[in-house]
Image 1 (cartoon, helix red, strand yellow):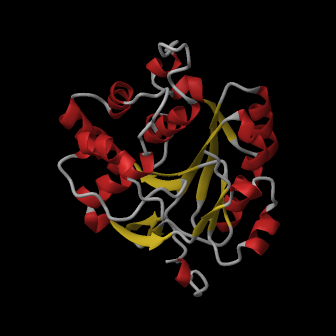
Image 2 (cartoon, helix red, strand yellow; image 1 turned 180 degrees about the horizontal axis):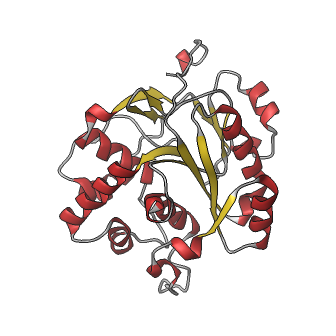
Length: 265
């Protein structure tokens, strides 16, 4: 697919409004301003609001106030069990930060009043105009990060199902309220637990978290509502060495990419 990255492409503007939610840890404050700037410039939808769901932090509150963003304290909206003291036998924290961020995305419609929510990682930014609907069908963007490690949890949550042959892990995802509701109901039928509680009982959160919220949602839509989406390659790049680069510098360095993620594992 990279061979096609230099071909011209345009995405249709959509009148479907959406909210944007960015989970934020204080360590990512230096990069999230770049993400917000890129979203405001390049999302081809009416944006109702941009919400930062972050740690209980005065620095994050100040950032939101200075940039016209709504701040939500993650402790107030995450499932109650997440904030309970949960330690491993070795004494480490059981619910790691990136698990909390995935749960924020999967439960976003429980605390955010919108029909469509673009969940977007703080270290990801847009370099060109993109949209997340083509007509009435959602665009599911595809990347090159396919891995079998997510399969066991996907099988338990969705099975039996045929997994999509490409990856939905793009560091962002448009979520639709009705589809997330159906996904939650499906997990309840499969496992007798809400999606969040199912995750709590299945994951070894201290060591190897084999959860991808993007794979879970994308494969659910592909399996049960194939008429509701189209796929497009993301034309993205993981560029951890450019974590401090400005948006202008990233555009100059990656002119044929739509997305750049400065993600660090």
